[in-house]
Length: 236
Image (tube, rainbow, N blue to C red; front, side, top):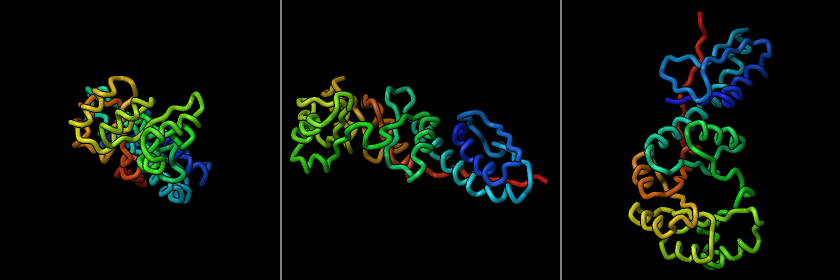
């Protein structure tokens, strides 16, 4: 198991400070520490009303973020030895994006875009509305600033070839088989960043990483990761 600490534990323990500023709080785990059943993360001393009043808010936040970190770590361990990196997406909980993306980072992954203003990502719907890969990319290039990177989602090798002919910073290889993805990486040949996507899990991640892609994006590590079941017990 994996537990993320600063700044996640700091945010969780803030609930106790806000409810009862006189509580004494002692943190017992370091940043990103691995924990086992029975380990103590923190000790809270003070009046019961303050402890119980903040308990659920603190545990909900800490359990949620620790679950995200744990899921990310499992994926990162599954592709260890490859050159690929696990990245998250914008499929985050409203209001918690910053903390969830920090949890991914502490779990051994990296962050994709934080928002629409970070870079241009041309998805399949954009391609369909623009009339194809080429017109979508050409239109994006006309409006992108000189520091704005452009990534486009492709489903086939033909779309990939079209994107490379126009020029692009990154290609999102969506729902391709490992065999097709390996061909795609060879076609790109370092001319763009390659990102694999499409319901990638612990079982399929090693084969995807073995294709030589640079990034593996997984939305589920932030929108569906199981919580790490932490609890608060009153000591007698």
